[in-house]
Image (cartoon, rainbow over all chains, first blue to last red; front, top):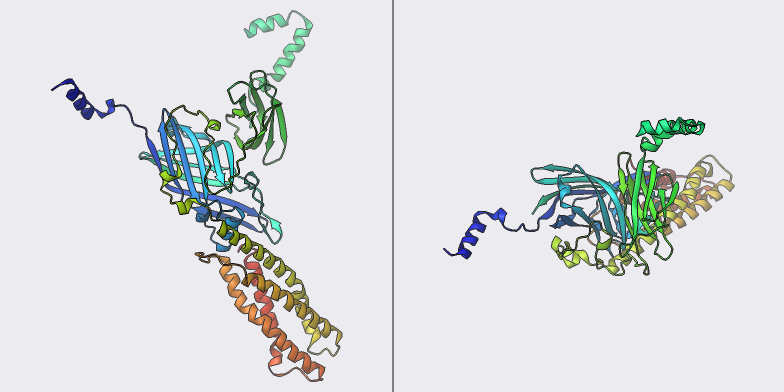
Length: 180
Length: 314
């Protein structure tokens, strides 16, 4: 057995000794809920259709989450169509969220994330958004609320009976990530 | 060290005053105010050089109260004693592009750190002029690595081009639909006024009344209601349908009511004309014309229910 063969055998026998590959995360179960307030209504739209991936390298993980604007369901098809129209959801069909977190954050209880959100044709950054993390069986559940507003994305507040909705549209996030 | 400090203070009378001040102010000097948070950071330029004397303004999203500080020579700034909440931050410095951060969350338990990089160049618009996504502004994200590993892209998520590309034609259809339904909504509200007035005048227009003034007013308001209702209905019927949309929620009840108040709005004036004719001939309202009142009530009720169903959450 020459040295090259011996090295190959050692690598096969002791894979942890080989250079660590970049780890990846994939988004599993998820729930994104926006809340809209109107003097006559309090309504919420929920989507469970987000897709996401995280790529880790050199201690940093880049995450991308995308969800179709049309996938949000408020229980009222008329309201949902208005939402898609007012947010220009047919023209810009995806909400995309990008963030970068240290790989060590997975072991934390809370994390403050800087988010870059593309929505309704605008790109907006939200800094230091707090999220809670829970890890069970290798999966990490992240929950928190993004303090989004309509004006951030240059969306005219839709009105009902001539009364506009409030500018604040907080988005509750509940996502479970698992290593790929 | 503190002992030495106080020993030195005892040496003159002004020291006593300073000592009193120290004791009085120490809690607020040494600790963060209870129930408030700190927001701090450093402002740099694109090359990483510090930007001094930059104006940093924090506006509470909740209360709209603003506070401003300037960065020091080392580019750092600090807001102390901020009530917990979300703040909109603005960074302004001569020769640099103004940057606004829509929301930074400040908690009572920790220090929120927000470092900001100002650009000298022209402002790069975040607008998306096409449906194609713009690349992430990596340089603005924290701890940007120098690695060549690509961040995930939409193709990594398994999204098809149909899911990621915009459809301006559908957007135009949605815009037209919303425009027409807004008019429908407003006309419906306006129609309610003469509708209610017509119903109120109804008992005075027929029955035992022999006068014609109330009856004529009733007829005039009824005609106005019918015309406005026709316009209202037109904008609902002609609003574009969006393919692939399954109707759910209150809109189903709203449309079901239209099958009552729609025919009712046609039948009511016909019966009303018959009743009007009979009354003008000195006859007592009889036959099918007697149904004018009940039909009008049912019609108005269905119209009101339709209006409420999409206005108030039950």
